Picture 1 (cartoon, one colour):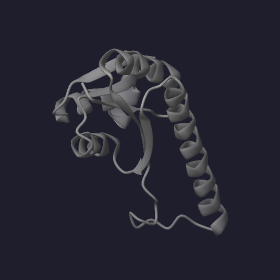
Picture 2 (spheres, helix red, strand yellow):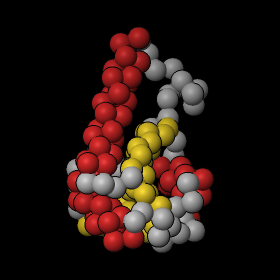
Picture 3 (cartoon, helix red, strand yellow):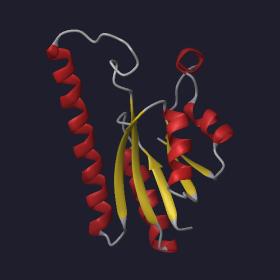
Picture 4 (cartoon, helix red, strand yellow):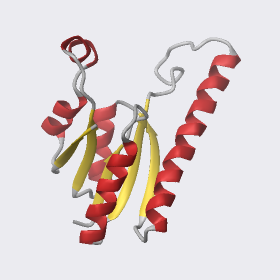
Amino acid sequence: MKNILVAIDFEGGAILLIDKANELAEKFGSKVWVVHVAAPDPEFVGIEIGPPSVREFRAKELRGEHRTIQHYTSMLNEKGIKAEGLLIPGATVDTIVEESFKLNIDLIIIGHHKHGFLYKTFAGNTDASLIKKSKVPVLIIPL
């Protein structure tokens, strides 16, 4: 197992995922890719996002997410694990599947947040969709 992709969101629990990736990377000598899929830029998908203050807020938010990803990769690097971070805009499941192919990933690690029926009905279930579409094993960590 040479490449592990850790897909993080910013809803909590990322440290558990990073710790699991660290544990596996130590055992197998793997490189870890810390990936966050950000919502695409509204202007890119043809939606007016309003005044410059809204764009500035979104840019600030993305810079913060990027810093957090870099913090996680630094944590892994300090433990002797090769790690890189990626902040990619797109649809979550499709983007993770595409990146896993591009990066020659052997294992995807994701977290599972417990949500109720209504949430799953309207927001979907990323875990199940990823398992269906992925060509590589997916390790789901309960958060």
